[in-house]
Image (tube, rainbow, N blue to C red; front, side, top):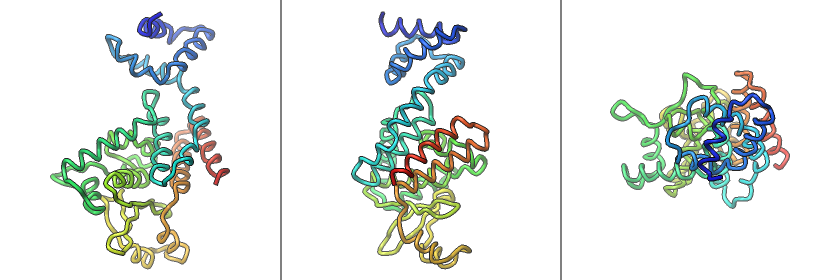
Length: 281
């Protein structure tokens, strides 16, 4: 049976009432999950909304199992930027849906970096922040999603890239991963309640609020004048956030997002990933 005929046949069985048929279709789709988007391009029509929903439902167990099995492989990589990108790619691909592959994130970030270079050339950290987050001619490329702050989509970098919306940690990570492609050393600051980016310019440490139009703040001033200023706060500002801290904070955000929507299954997935991370610290 050709791949196209096989897909056509499976499409006719997506909503079959038989449990046995559903399990068989699920096995077939799961076995070809990575090739499915390409195979579906050869159909003479797009999938209907119901077909998309059935695909997502049937493929969810295999996608979840794969995420749980391969999670922590980012630890094998040899630098913090690569580790962060891999970890975020795993989470984001899972959140974004069955068509998305982990490797797609690097392609999307490369394309954005190329667009930035064509538009503004080689940029420093402040210029890149302005290109990403500043309002120009009444528009902005990326901004904080203040209207739907707790949605799980804010932790999906594919969604952030498509909509231009995100939360403090996803926007800070986008800034960092794009900056890495420009040779810029941008880190994260595990600031309580509001994640920030962190960078060094001419010997001074700056914190960058990517959620609020990329505002630059001297780290020394924040440590001194913030209402919660204390020695522990100074330590948070002085040391870049580790990959473990960033990914764990993102997973906790997702835990809260799914708690708010009573999505216990997805909340359980995020908690399992967080437990694995903490166990291997």
